[in-house]
Image (cartoon, rainbow, N blue to C red; front, side, top):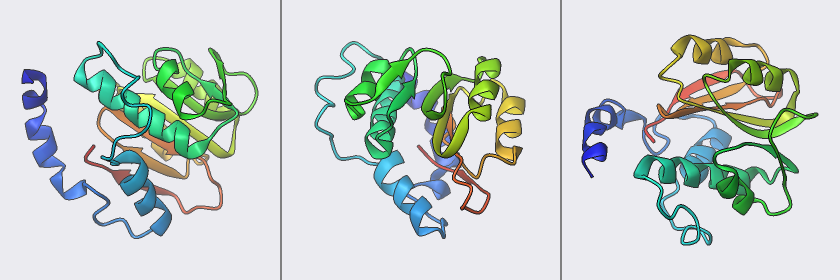
Length: 175
């Protein structure tokens, strides 16, 4: 409870960026409303996250929704593998970058793996980088990279979409 209170000033600073306000793209708006900021309970929420703190559970549920939305064949993850696998049961979980990356989650400190994953993306790839506030220089390079098309800054993590048919756009989302 006290941990959540210390993030209240952050939430108030980002209040104008919640629930898709100001997003003109219908695709991005739907992604923010129905994947990132979805508040309805999903079918696996009861089975996942027992014993996790609130932030781990919040991020894990986001990763579950991302996996459920994207339905990837291959997921690159380690710590949140149970959440990601629950979102797409047919997905194969791998530890390192192996072939085309469809959905991957890294921390910002794993900059080498992030760069390797960026080299192995296609138009369906989605990359999640956790802890973007700890290394804003790395996050800024990902946002500015010409391969990344749509990026979402959720404060706790960043989401990069590589669909090359889309216009380059960066969003700040109150998550």
